[in-house]
Amino acid sequence: MYKDVSIIAGPSSVDLAIGISKHLDAELVPVDLRIFADGESKVNVRTVEKDHCVIIQSTYPPTDRHLLQALMLIKRCSEDSAKVYTVMPYMAYSRQDRAFLEGEVATMDLVAKLIEAVGTKTFITVDIHSPASLSYFTIKAQNISAVGLLARYAKVKFKTKIPIVVSPDKGGVQRAVEFANELSTDMIALTKRRNKDTGEIIIEEKELNCNVVDRDLILLDDTITTGGSIVEACRFLRTYKPNKIYAMCTHAVLIGDTKRRVKAAGIEEIISTNSIPGNSAKVDLAGLISGQIKNIID
Ligand code: R5P
Image (tube, rainbow, N blue to C red; front, side):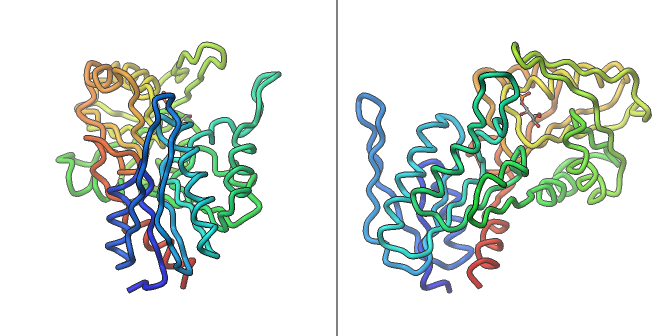
């Protein structure tokens, strides 16, 4: 039992925090949350008084609200505990790790500075979009991978015969290789371009150098937000006559009517981790995150 550890159940990640506290056999500290009529959050955490205080709070939409709640919790806990750890399984703003167009802001730099300024000593996230963006932190900042967990889920639960793993973009090659290795199968990485002004997605692959006829495909991405990337990848892949197409990701943001559009594109189902709660969140991160917390504390 981790008697000197408190797990703070951030409002966006209550179930995950419960799971982590069970894995560590550590105290779970609930957070009272009030949202005022103007949208402001107010948090209340009773006295923590533990050596190690671990805040679990993902920053999925409403992103800025969840981020500000995390900052409030860090500030509150650092008043009572010397060692505050912040776990943000889904880390927003990592896509804005630099100014891509003139006049833009490297917002990840700002967010890292805010998280540090309020008193966290260690930061942990899962499959962050840009691992390089963690260099904005001067404290210990770690990215852990859920790819093994996702692959093992696919192996056990999908009734597929030797599927092919497909990354919708070249940025996901390493992830797809790792996943395919776990399944002892092949992988493909498509070439994707996103129009930086309009957000429109284009799959620029000329042709597929792998025979996918009648094979099941698993589209793998770090995040599915609008579904644009996997829907376009699916449209392209369909022309090569595969069998079923599944989608897996660490973070299923799934805004608006994404689920409907993904289904309409012919994708069987989306499976994700519980970095973001929802129907697709079938892969539990509690064990993975607990292991990382143990490594740091021990
Ligand atoms: C981008 O490069 C990421 O890896 C994902 O492909 C992207 O965030 C997915 O977003 P959407 O579902 O909106 O296409």
